[in-house]
Image (cartoon, rainbow, N blue to C red; front, side, top):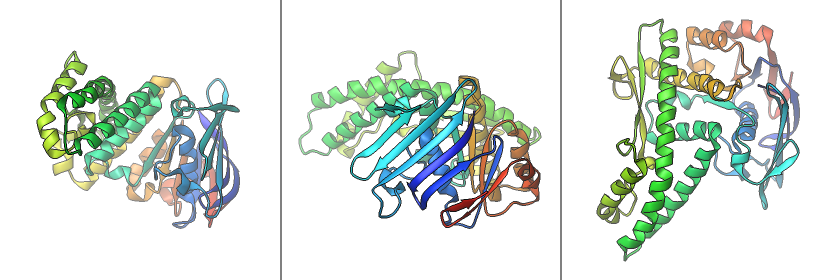
Length: 361
């Protein structure tokens, strides 16, 4: 899979833009705050239906404009695909796939497979658990639209339950209505997360071994909020039910997949607590590269990788490894300059220069 063309109107600092891309490597070069990341954001939103930077669609509409339009034309193995998204300040978001309107975000998924790797992702190992849960959710939503349905329903129920827990008089029998639903949707989330981490662990370990020349062994473990058993729904329901007294006291839901985490180990040492910054970054790099292999294995399509200002954070060896191992997929690389490590890749690809919302090949 690769992106042929992107067309933007009133998106962030772009008034109008139409670009055709190289099938392999595309460098987006410019100083900070010129629009490099904005371009990658426009590509990403056509994959997931939302930004990787903000939860507010209105923030992506150009200043003093009422709407924004993003159109991506891509080529899959067997057929082309067009995704067009229109953001309106007063009327929300509309999505078209191959000219047909779709009403649910889950119908957008599985059209474009995009993996984003930014400087923030380099911190995924050491930062708070919420970032690691967002990583799992983002990738599973893309691979399995049914996961998005379960996650959306789970979030709705937990919001209702938490709001009720803040009321003065709480009836445990009323809580039980939400507990049953949390167990239904939450058990599906946990099961799919567990399967995902098992697969990503195996791939990440192989990639990490290649990056470190076999000197280190990476292991990724899923840390669910409950014990994994055959009847997950019943196990989760009982766990939530037992926590009702503490939930009433704390006025929040304390059990369920919204409290899950992932642990990273290098040679059986917890990387988050005891690993060096270099080890944390290499583990994060292995994790992101494993996404690409997993998408290929699950869908048969090569994903597109967006590298947002991440190259300057990696040493020359890591940069060369990235370019060498990703020669078969389409790359979008934002950077302030092309150094010696990237010069060979640049000669085979296409270079775009960005300045104040204007891009020139």
